[in-house]
Length: 86
Image (cartoon, rainbow, N blue to C red; front, side, top):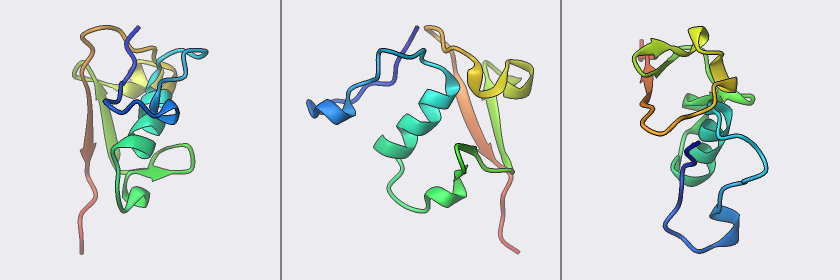
């Protein structure tokens, strides 16, 4: 399976190899390593917030097991926001 990786040598940035590289892992890795502000626009609790569509290889993640889907080499995961201002 594929793990998101960091260019930093900081031990806290290294992937947790004791668990599968699933979409839940990817979401939390992105929160800790990529998102720099307004995390609440992407996450609510332990998952993406309502209004964020998650596509795995052009298929809705609900059909793939949502966060439990184990990532494979070559998978494409896309997050699409349907949230907009009023």
